[in-house]
Length: 389
Image (cartoon, rainbow, N blue to C red; front, side, top):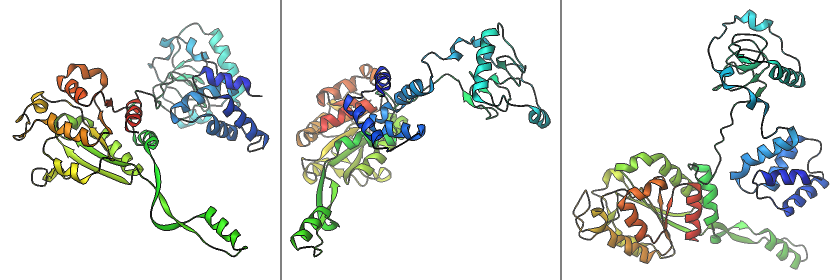
């Protein structure tokens, strides 16, 4: 049972195993769902898909197997010029009210196939053929109480019962731009829980054992709350070319604050020197010594630099190379000190990796980081997390 469904999933690239298929069959045997396609869809996706990155692939495989949607759809054979917008009929409310639907999706699909087989040329403003701007149930930029929308850019009358536009999926894929949710999911691989603090949470298993030892006399046991014990120190590059990546950095910052209790962050510009800061408006008056960071935060903190690493090579390699002040020691010296103390460290670069080879500064920092620079994409973040583990 569902063996062919399993093969369809694998053909669509889902990493589903026999064990997960058996889990699904066991859930069905236990009547977790019964005679409900939507409930089965939710159950199957929960059991078979372990990563949100594969949700869209699952949807396509599910549609192909259960709804008969083939990989090459009917609309693919419609010439593109039939669907180009041109003449569009202007209908009164009375005209719209007089239009009748075909009554069922089966009848709609039947007539769609018939039109597709019979039609030989483009039509516009009509009421029968596949075209544009008319009252036909098939085509684009027209009006019908229940039709099939094909090849239209966006919605129009919001009456279509089936939309057959070109599918442009925005998956959580390897090179996909990050958003808060995908960052949170990736960061969870870095979590390590421990119980710390006062004993304020009920220890259910301990209470059962203690109560059993007292012959049923209730003996409540308490335990400290579980917290993510991983400690994170983030240094954000701000200003200049980093203004182009404010949104990405805000998303990363928001997700990290949600996932980690032990989080510290500071700002720098282009390269880290003798001082960093918390408040960008007072960055010249309220700097914190970088040397103090080395003394204040223990070596078990995981260090993350976030910056596009785009600057003049002098800013990294020479004393006085900073564009804003005279630094007594080169930025590379301070970076080496940080990397020596925080041995678990990565650099996240929001600039597309294909552009890195054009910047000498990025190549210099990649060498200092010993290859631990990753792009700020889902795949890059996952790779960075593996480095920090």
